Length: 181
Image (cartoon, rainbow, N blue to C red):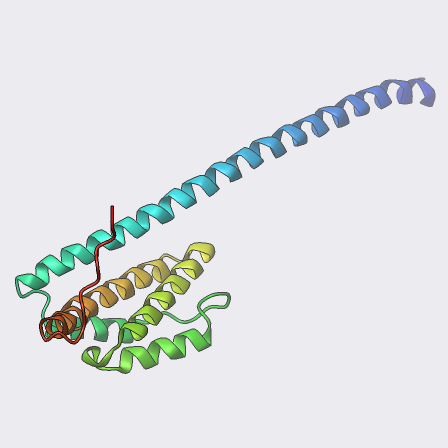
């Protein structure tokens, strides 16, 4: 029979070797996951910048369409109704019950009565909903946030910008000066 000392003298170096291998693998994986996290953060920063450019592009596109008589007041009201009826349930971190109540209040207003401050708040709420959807992985929240941003753009283009143009023509509001080069 094999005595216990012989078994232990064989098993201990083997177990030590396995532990060293596992520790080395864990260290290597930790370094790799750190690199992956850094790359994801970089992609997220670049995507955020891309998202902003895309939103600005959409605002220009909606402005061009407005010059051709589209979108109309009815289309803005239809989008407002859509947003009100399909509002997702609030979750917890960013898109809270309080934010949802404020969203309901702002969507209850006639778009023609919304102010630039109201639109900035709707845009902020859209960002909160987007962040909640991004972190929770809920695509419905991200899609709703983009539709809410579209509504903000359409209200600006259809209701706010024409009022500002009229005020400028009447001399009540002065055009912004161009920055010097």
